[in-house]
Amino acid sequence: MRYDRQIKLSEVGNSGQEKLQDTSVLIVGVGGLGCPAAQYLAGAGIGKIGLMDHDRVSLSNLHRQILFCEGDIGKSKAQVAKEKLEQLNSEIRLVAIEEALTIENAERIFSEYDIILDGTDNFETKYLINDASILNEKPWVYASIYKNEGQLSVFNYQNGPTYRCLFPKTTRQNISCEATGVLGVTPGILGMLQATEVLKIILGVGKIFSGKLKIMNILSGSEQILNIQKKPTEIEKIRENGIIPVKIECRIKDAEQKYLDIREIFEQPKINSENVIQIPMSVLDERLWEIPKEEEILVFCQSGKRSKKVVELLRNEYGFEHLKNVEGGIETIIV
Amino acid sequence: MKVNLKYFGMIAESVGKTEEVLELGENISLEELKARQVQKHNIADPESIQLAVNQDLNTEVELKDDDEVAFLPPFAGG
Figure 1 (cartoon, helix red, strand yellow):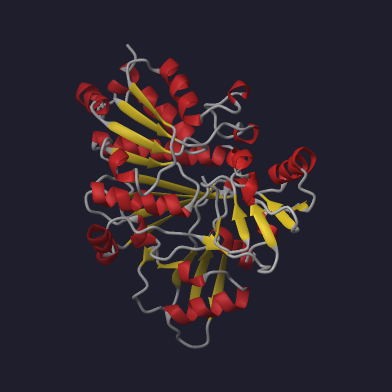
Figure 2: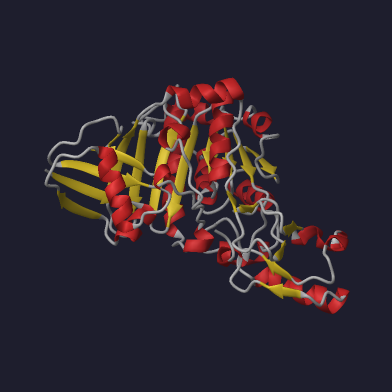
């Protein structure tokens, strides 16, 4: 039968398999971490898995987000993941949630799951997961990657330390894997370690990485485990005030120049400057009237590619003659 | 006194290595050590950096000879 090879283990057995079937896991971010985690958890027979991602599959995802194929490009990650995992295991419940995690929806969605697995790639969402987990009293399994290095921990497990205990102050250096580069195997390894922690929590076996931070470098093979101190004031302030939004905002270097930001609302870092008009590319045609025609405006996105297309389109189709592309993308114009 | 330093993430890139041994003429506090390394290697955003002494992320300890101090930055890729 399907689960025979894991049921044979004394740590699982029939009672362990029932526990897996009775548990629900929410995967926030079905990307480099979330894909392998989702596959192994679906394979193991977790009763219900929520697959939450607002993003769509792109070509540059495929080297590490191994649930997706070339034919999936442009499709919803949550939906594609659900369909692929249904083929792997039709006996479990899979829920596609095509939304970004926000302050408004976090507590409601978290209340429907037992364990949260963090597959996100930015600080704002990690603090949001942390706070919503505290308020909903759920453990969450954290991982993060910088180039060839990964961090792993389990937060808010049986009143243990939280992410705010580890990093009370965040940084504006929100550097994504897209920006720094990453080998596909790095989030793969970390995502599988996250799935392992989920299984250990459910089965009640092994040593759970609560109060511990594992740091590993996949190139040097070095591994370090640090002990995290619980900071009760960091937890109490969330219990008392609710979710505290962490906003990582940047300023534009040149305050006189007018800019047009065509990135989608979920893209990081956010810009908060009066000289920036923000119109996501997805709704650009409905809001063209907001763009002044007689002024020189520099158009930017993350890398300079999408904004180049937008500049050409607006110039050729709609007669905007004073638009220029920021070739190097957002990083070249912010402080 | 002598301290063994370990650097992670982008800090290792700023310093140009993942570990080093530092000989200090005098006894200094953990905060002084951090400030000194931050200035020497031009490490960004020091407020967000956490230190671990002998694998404990607890900064309310006195540095002793031969302690290991890890410099840990937050990062969020995934």
